[in-house]
Length: 387
Ligand code: NZQ
Ligand code: ZN
Image (cartoon, rainbow, N blue to C red; front, side, top):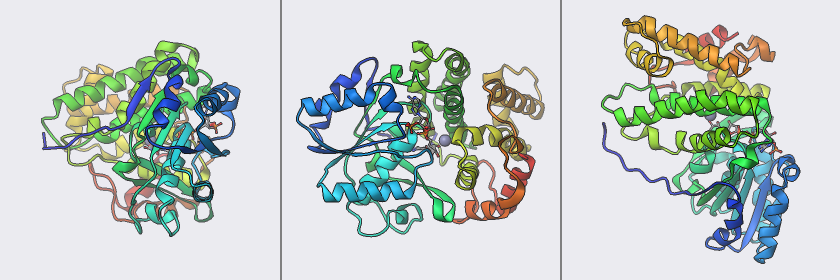
């Protein structure tokens, strides 16, 4: 295990009615709030009314930014920056899924920056003095509620890229599982795949001696395998929603990546290309790509870790690592299919049209992946195998 520093600084308010603590918590960080949300789920569920009554009850001034889309667009970020400047807002509250929270973070970074916020994701600018962000999570998936990452799409140039800074971690996040009861089957399944994928990205490394990190990671995977299908079938099952919600935060707050050099993150890089070109749901893209990536990188060097995964998660008993790994990959694909996620690009109407460009864009900063390094040709091969 390597040396590491670890701080997951987001204060979590977990459970039923925790939104009652919203105003009190905001007042520790700001006075004038940008309330950012998506396309209307929070109005249907009653969460919007609850938030407004918290804000007005405490005399907190607010301005709204609504309509943030899944795969959040740069134009929403710019609009949010404009609203913050014009109204001298000093706190951003994102209420929604990962897209809303990511957009909130990019706005937070953009307010004190004179240039185009896109500069952050193309590594032309560093985050300086971001506004504080808080979140109320409504969809268990990305872990954005407890990390400093934001993924933004630029529709005009068909690019989707990530930015990250420790200071963009929400100062608090409210996680009330009852507000996820309304998440539909597709998004519930996609969210479950996303949580598992965040574990995969940090679990499949060549670091050794990280037993505790691997055990936590395996526990989170088992949580998704146990509760994902329950939440899909029984949307108001509190136990399932609560376990998935906490799994979402724990899977990508830095915990399971501690003591390791880097995660892999190639599959996420490739999926972001699919979402950029086809506006695909992130978790659905991952469900297609992850089993293919596992098959592609499987060789004598990677087999032991893939076999560990197969044995500890899917109870594969074969002694041979290569064979065990293959069985584990099959089980992964089967599980994603059980969640009714797609297993091929054809199923989501994606053809080879943009594969060359996607491969090029994914490698714009050089080869990707650490478990096995992948260049543009490898990425194109993976996309072809995913057809
Ligand atoms: O627009 P609204 O009305 O909010 O509806 C959303 C949206 O249509 C809906 N939804 C959310 N909560 C709901 C609900 N519907 C009913 N009831 C609720 N309680 O679900 C749809 C999808 O929402 P979205 O926020 O896009 O989903 P998710 O949380 O999966 O976020 C996906 C985005 O996060 C990025 C992805 O790439 C994608 O852009 N990621 C962010 C990461 C991070 N910040 O660390 C890491 C991830 O790997 C990922 O890349
Ligand atoms: Zn993800």
